[in-house]
Length: 76
Image 1 (tube, rainbow, N blue to C red):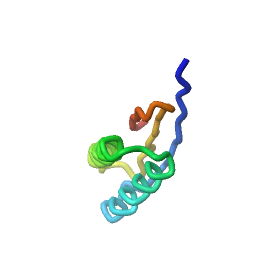
Image 2: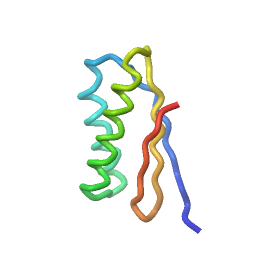
Image 3: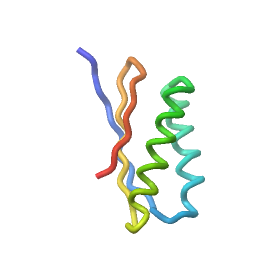
Image 4: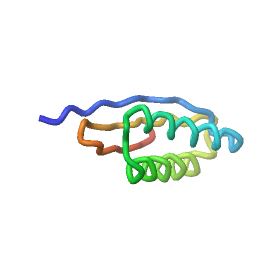
């Protein structure tokens, strides 16, 4: 059975926060020792969700991952 873990972050939806989010995602992926394809997917998902929720004051992102390196990011 594959164990799925997740991390939930509530972040500012302010446009100025986007670079901070990108660096945080890169640090997170690096700490999990994920490859470039997974990192690229996570960055794309985060940016898409960030833009989708730009009218909100904050965005809650959930990062899900498993030991096989599969990742997912979604907002609540």
